[in-house]
Image (tube, rainbow, N blue to C red):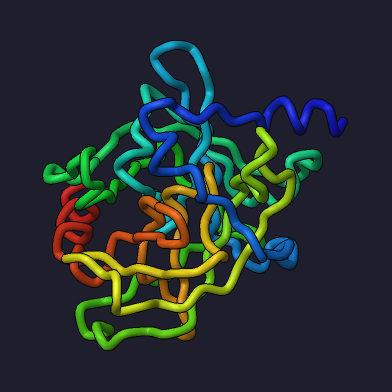
Length: 237
């Protein structure tokens, strides 16, 4: 029922992050065509205090999901093939067996905000569950037009996440970029609960990981700069 969907979708903003995430909602977004982004993953984060929080993520292969390092949790329920919370048909649920936050992640400035999660059981690929290709170091020339998607808040005045997958167009700006990160500006951007989702650009590859936001500025870990780190972890494990 819808009430269950809303209670599942309830998100609590940690006070420490409130100033960072105050304006992080997919504003100006629209509902994604169902299952048009089959790499999208919803992470239910089971926290030490017993609360459940949410982050986005995306599927890299049958074993690994990428997300943001600040989405670290005690344990996870990973939902694959999800579009609408209130329709659980065909959703694959699994957990995480190993977490690989970047060792240089800095929680004060959100640098190196990237993490790999190894699934406890292999994802079964289908129409609704597919991996996404990562941008490589050769894809370093700046993509312009990209899309962010997630189940995060759609309005800063409501305490709930979105019941359906939302997406929004964003344009990468060179004015605010920091080392190893992309930046987008404007009213439109990722929301609270969208952290860890992908920044997907014109060629259909994932270029960034949703990291942090301030008023009308959003920052993403720059995947091409982390390819050797990503590949070494996935090859070792």
